[in-house]
Structure formats: C-alpha cells, structure tokens
Length: 471
Image 1 (cartoon, helix red, strand yellow):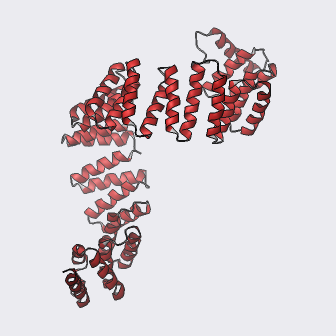
Image 2 (spheres, rainbow, N blue to C red):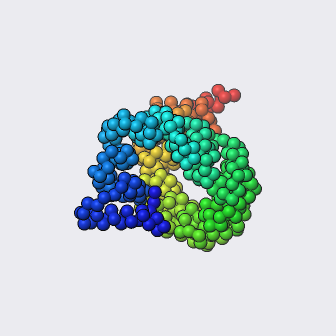
Image 3 (cartoon, rainbow, N blue to C red):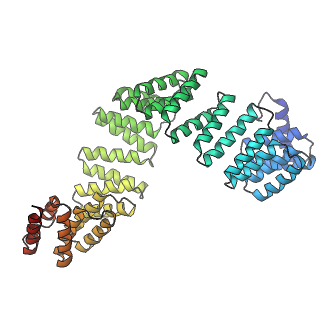
C-alpha cells in the first residue's frame, strides 16, 4: 500500500525506518510495518531500499511468510530465478495452499517463457482464492497477460472481460480487450461489446474513445464522430479524443473544424508533432501554403526525428517545383537520420530533377542498399548510369534487378541496348529477342536510351522477324 498524509501510522513507520538507516540504530518493527515499507519502496521503484527492508525484516521476523514472498519477488525482478525457486520450494512445503506461492511460481514460469505452465499455476491460485473481488481480478488479469504472450487472443479477451465484470472501471483491462478485438479483426464484435459496456458505464471517456476508433476502422465516420464527441463530453480535457475527432473530420474533408480540434490538443497538453503535422496537411488541403509550411516547420522543430515532418516539407517544396529548397530540407533530414530509406529516395528524385546525375545515382544506390528494391528504383539508377556512360555498372545494376524482377521487358530492353553498346553481340541478341517476346510495346526504351544502335542491321532484323511472328 502507498503511504499517504492521512495514514499517520504508515508515515511514522517510514520516517522511523529511514531515520534508522541514517543512524545505524536498529529499531523494532512488527512484520506488517515491514510489509508496508517494502511495498511502498517497490511501488516507487526503489529496489535497493526494499531489499534493505526485507533483510532487516527477516532478521527480526525469520518465519514471516509474506516477507519471504517479497524476497522471492525481488529475486524474480533481478532474474535470479534459481534462488527464487529454491525459496519458493521451501515455502511450498510449509504452506502448500497459499495462493501467493502459486502467483510467484507463475511469475517465475512466465520469466522462463513457459506461459502455458504459468497459466495452469495461476488457475490453481484462482481456485485457492477465497476473495472473488479484487484479488480474483488481479489473477484474471495475470492469466489474460499470459494468454497474450501466447498470442491466444480469444482466451486473453475472456479473462480481461472477467476483470471488467468485477471492476467496471478497470481501464487497463478495457484497453486489453479492445486490443484483442483489433488483433482478431473483430470490429463489429468490439462495437457490440463497447456499446453494452457503455450501457452500464455511460460516462466512460475511455470506452467512447475506443468505440470511436472501431467506427473509424470500419469507415463509419458519422458514428465515429458521435463517439468522440461523447468522449469529450465525459472528459473535456481528453487529448486523444480531440486527435481522433480531427482525423475523422479530415476524412470528411472538414479541414477547418479538424484544425480547431488539433489546436485544442496543443492548448491542453505539450505540443505533439502528430497534431502539428496534421494541421499543416489540413492547411495544405485548404490551399493555405504559408500556414501549411509554417506548421511543417513547427513539426520538425518539435520532433526532429519524425520522418513524416521532413517528408512533408520536402514534398511541399517539390510540388511548388522549388527543387533547391526541397533538396536543402532533405539534406537536413539525412544529416539527422542517414539510414532513412524514404529520405534517400526523395534525395535521389530531387537531384534527378535538378539533373545532378551523380548525386541522384548516389541517392538511388543508397536507397537500394537500405532495402528499397522497387523496380522504378533499379530502373532510375540504371538510366542515370547509362546517361553517365557507365555501361558496365548499369549492366551489373540491371542484372541485380532481374533477380527480383525476372522476365521484365523494361530490364531486358535496357540490357539489350547496353550489350550492343559494349559490343557483346551474343548477349545483346539474347536480351533483345527475350524483350520482344515479353512485350514489344517497350521498344521505345531503345529509341530513348540507345538511339545510336537502332540502325544496326542485326537489330532491324530481330525487330522485323518479331513483328512478322506476331501477325
């Protein structure tokens, strides 16, 4: 239990204990006092002080079962599972019907990833539990969590629902229930459950918020909006409800009202980069460019690591065809995160537009190195290498591309043109015939990239034969 100003006895125990630690004078506490002191330190995360209290407690009360259970809890926290099990086995021989023994045993099994065994053990604790209220609720929640570890979402949901039946305001369980519904793609079932829950607890902002999110998922924006409004009526400082309401209003193209809701979140809480970014996008949709870019700047100022902010600024200037400014901001973004594949792709595209071919090639190469294997990335890099006269590198690039996209006419025509340019006739003929068989429509690639080779008699013959065979 936590110490509060009203609880003079507990405050006195804590003050007495901390005074004893400072003076090294050993004072006597009864076992309940030690339990409260240990619990207090555990709840506020002061493990070292809780360990001192356990040590002194066991020196004064060596037979106290609860103090030994605290000792086991600390061992589990510190991953000293063998020591915990040894102590637990000793306790089990003394009190085989103590539910706390089973809870700690389950805790150890869970730490060992033996989640089904942990569930079986917690079910024994549940049978031993005489209190069918709060203690049972805690046990149901622990079983639910173990089922989540096993990805058994139906079972997990069942146990979290039991928690909610005992305590209607157990919002942690409510979140876990909707998490299970979401994972199982059971939106309609989630909506039905939440509506039934709201019949019993109509002013629960958490439930209205979750209901709104379910309606949003199934694209019922009118009902989603109503749910978020009820969440706000239940708690007019609920930031999450205003954010979600803003998202719905955006979907309905009601950008002015969406902006108003996002701005409320900025007044209620620390500015969130998500809200700032959405406001920027709304102003962009309203063709208020100056305001849009102002909020994109605010987004990256608030969270320099949010890639969506930098991407928004870069794309904003891209659309305006202000490629130099777009390049300036994508360079800034790359300086902050040099492993972001989207940054490098934009960097390559902008340099390409500015006809800075070597920089564009570097960008596409980096994009590929970071795992973006889309066909346009391979082709764009290949075309730049062709323009730079680096035919061998272009061939190597396209052969790599063909591993991901075999039998692709855009690759085959380019390889044919490259091999003709490199005077490797056999390979050139093979790729050209293959390209014509796959799709003659892409013949324009040769006209655009390799106009000098089109007059070769061998090429004319392959093209002619191919056209005849298709008639």
